[in-house]
Length: 247
Ligand code: ADP
Ligand code: MG
Image 1 (tube, rainbow, N blue to C red):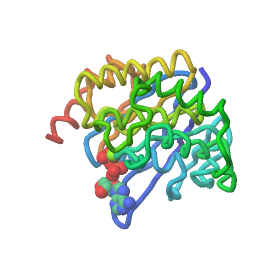
Image 2: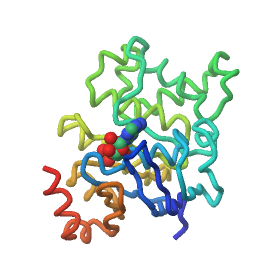
Image 3: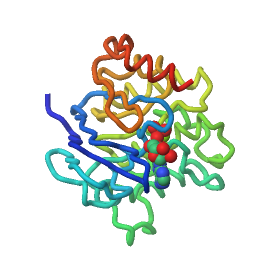
């Protein structure tokens, strides 16, 4: 089993708050890995560190064997490591196709080429991906008119058009109705199986993550609490206590 991302002894502090303390984990290639933990346990902070959103205080992060902890977001994105946000980042006044188009430079193009005319091939790809996530019919509607769940599907599509090797998803199902959750899980699984995209997913909904991931890490208070397959994690007393203690 090759690992795509290796996090070793990573710490991140905000003033006096230790958001991540000596975190180590590995994300295997071609699989779906979960990251769970109560609110405030440091999950989003870890994603931010991996994608180069802020510098880490100590430790090492490698992507396909290459140290990336000193690189910035665009450099890391160009290597094929992308993320989606807990709050979606779409342009509400622009239609879905235009949102797809402006997201392309993330990985493939330098900023200076952002304003070149997009090729017919690129437009076709955007349509095919919107079809894949179930938004083809709505492709010329303003993104802001979509439901929150559909906006998350659009954000997922915006990541896919950049052909990521790995996609980090921060609470993809939060705020989405149950019908769309099932559709989204299905799409995530297909992106993994059919397109070979490795997924690393932060998820608060236990049912969802148990269903989706084949290995799961659990954080609590900035520390790594447990790691195992869904069955192990579900029955781990430390994990159960961390969740019960949080509510
Ligand atoms: P989670 O995603 O698991 O809910 P976060 O990573 O968002 O947790 O937060 C972990 C801790 O770090 C929290 O105590 C949070 O308040 C703190 N934190 C996160 N980001 C910042 C920031 N930019 N500035 C100050 N504190 C932060
Ligand atoms: Mg978070």
